[in-house]
Image (cartoon, rainbow, N blue to C red):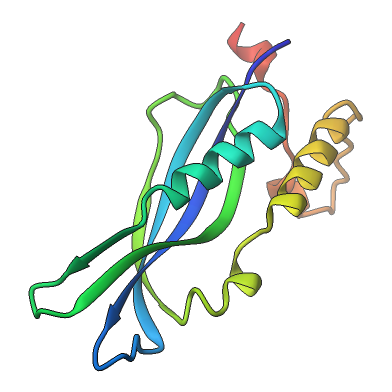
Amino acid sequence: MNTMRFAFKLLFQFRVMIKRNPGKFRRCEERTIVVDNVETAEEAVDRALSYGHNQHRTFTNTAGHKAHFEFVGILDYIELGIECHECEVWYDYVIRKEPMENRKNTTICRAKIIKEMKKKRLDEKKPITIYPNDHSHKNIDVDLREFYE
């Protein structure tokens, strides 16, 4: 069986407690990780979730406040084909309103990710049809393996 490779965009929050109040707006980190050498979608998602949960840290910041670095969830994912170089990753810092409290609206649950991954793999076997006036071409996934072999 061929192994697969994925990138997962993970959301983390810095929750700083000031007078027992974490505030509504928190600095967040969006981090992309690569999960490779997996044989199933479930294995890929579980490895990404495990990575996220293992990043939790609690510390005292420079102002003397207790701070937590916490995994919120998965924001996005993509299967990386052979056209993608193995070292390509990125991250960004953003400000979000109550990221942990709103995680059900911003992150993707495990079951939905696995369902979408399986559907995508089935759809790859269908022929791609492009219509002249259809501007959804940005969403078409093409198997580029033949160009790199």
